[in-house]
Structure formats: structure tokens, C-alpha cells
Image (cartoon, rainbow, N blue to C red; front, side, top):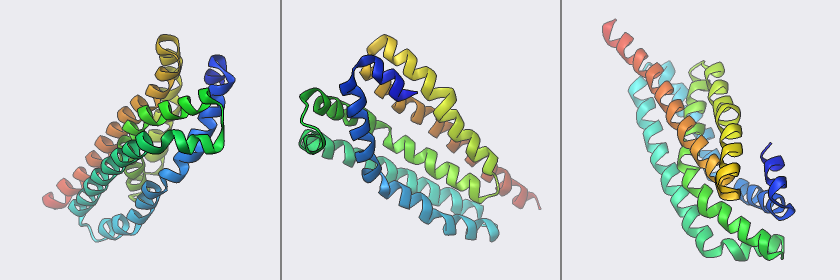
Length: 191
């Protein structure tokens, strides 16, 4: 859907999105690894009924995700255009890739929150809740916001839609995960 929206802007916008998302996969491997490495920590503490530790681990991971997002933003501010030029020599594509990282990197912390929260939900036996959070981000928020962003601001609006969808869904996923864990903490204290 996003590629279709960008195709209405220009072929260069589509090419830039392809380059940027491939680079993004490499840049975000750290956050993916963080989410995966939390599995044993969350599972062990869930099984041991040490629910407070789950929230502590999640909050520390969220902080790291925001720091990593800021690092990527600074890095791409400096080397974004030279790296993009390795993939495509068209100046419009290079500028769109640079614009993508200038905008979207602000959402990486929220993307990390979404990923970590959905990982926690899956591990604590709430996989449907986890899936619902991802559907919320990708379908309920991103697609309509991308159409709206494109109609109001063009390509900048499409890229900003990604940030907004990550911010809203990441915060909601965190709230939902925290609510479930806190209910276990409350139940344990009452028992």
C-alpha cells in the first residue's frame, strides 16, 4: 500500500523507499536482537512470578531503543546521502532516502517500544494481543495516515505517517502490556 502511494508521487520515491527500507533492516537489527534476547528474561521472570522485573527489563529496553533511534538519526544525517548514493546515483532518490531517515528515525524508539511490548505479550501467553498491536500499527493506523499524509504533505506526510503510527501503537502496546503485567502483580499481592 505504501509503495502504491509513493508510486503516485514518482518512480524515484518508490526507488528511495526500497533503498531506505533495505538500509533500515540493517540499521534496526540491534533492536530486533534486543527484542529476541528479552525472551528468556521475560519468560524466566514470568514463570518465577517476578512480574516487576518484566517491567524493569522492558523500561530499560525502551530507553535503549530511543538512544539507538537518536544514534541512527545522527548517523544518517551525516552519512545518509553518501550511503544512498552507493545504491542509486539519481539525485532525487538520494534526497528522498535522506529525507526518509531524517523523518523516520524519530520513530525508531517507538518502533522499539512496539516490538518489545509485543514480544513481552507473546511470551506471557498473549499472542493474539501481540498480533492485534501489530495490526493496529500496520493496518488501522499506517494505511489511513499514509493516505492522509500524502494528500496533505506529499512524501513527507507518508514518512511522517510511519512515525505517528509507531508512536501511537507503541504507546498503546506498552500501556496494554503494562496493564496485564500490573494485574498479575496486583493478584500476587492479594494472594
